[in-house]
Length: 472
RNA sequence: GGCGUCGUGGCGGAGUGGUUACGCAGCGGUCUGCAAAACCGCGUACGCCGGUUCAAUUCCGGCCGACGCCUCCA
Image 1 (cartoon, chains in turn cyan, red):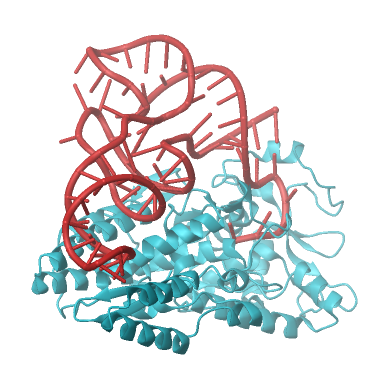
Image 2 (cartoon, rainbow, N blue to C red; image 1 turned 60 degrees about the vertical axis):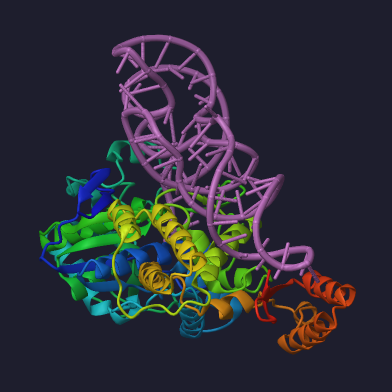
């Protein structure tokens, strides 16, 4: 039985979808005004894996991930760049799609944009006003009246009174209560806006997710996810809006992923300590985006994960071991679930324990290597198929082994790329070395090996005089 | 200040009331002209102090330390 840690209750619960066999999930996406960093990647990959595993378990999954394409940050950034909001958000939406595709994140079934759901947002705001959960403030904004919602704070474990007294930000005078938040924001001159019953304006941040999830998934669905920093106030406010507007209970399970840290501190835009996905992929330390994905899966999604070069290298080594195991094996077309599958499923059933699941893959690789060692081709072939199936559920081992092992780490700069040995140069040197070996000139043979080793290329002399290479 | 998470061997990182995590790195062996990959073997870790227990890294209490949310943020 699949267990999911539900933020709402603070414990693991057996997963039971509202409709048997069907899972509807909504994950908070990004605000598109800059490139995505590794923290974004972690969240996307965590929920991508959850989605894939639910499918592996036979559920029909509807996966929604929104794009926030209008908010204060976007407006500011566009103004600063001297470009239109649309041009800015289009640009970064494309970049985001590129980054996530690179990392093997499956495209969502629905990817709603806030600006495409203005009618739904307005409708929900009207409902909230009609039900007296919202009011038109003196400054023209529409506010949500937090005190009217009895369960407010349930998700994040906060008390309204403490929020009031602990307010660290200057209180907006237009609010009747310091904890109230904006549903609809009146436009200032020159700002992008949409007509509404309260004049020209734009949606507040939180309402879009309530409106879009309602439009696509309805008033109640199975899983709502996002980064732990969204728990409060974003998700708390979503609950307040949605439950008040629809009278239904909104998401059944709430999942939150932990942060990516740098030097033990949260990676964030405001701390300016973030690493962009594309920069890391082009850093010259990552031979394939799968390495980054693997690294992010090597820790449990709810805990913190520290980003460092050493860890990227370790991820590369661990992943390479799996690829090495798959070399020279023809996977059978049929998968026979063995002990590794059992361990894998137990791990994933336990709140998507990917580190434990990866351990199952490593153990499977050991079994596979043993089979190869013993010359049991049939067993090796069966185990390889099992390995590929399980790895596929995590979105790794998508390349052919030699493609991965021979891939050079991408670099952003031309000169460092030029410093890498090209495949033609490698082939040439290997040919020279083969000739030297045939002539029993081992001094020359070793000289060439050293040359290649220094260039990060490792040679493997196989029986029969064949030499294969791979990159370190 | 309020709420919360965490502290595991050289590094990373699961997990458990008493028998192996797993990977990387390291050491020894097999194989190899030399290597590599792989296989075989090796590490007796669980912040500190108490308590419960036949038994605690695992439960309880305290302490110390790190981090997070309370403000835009995945």
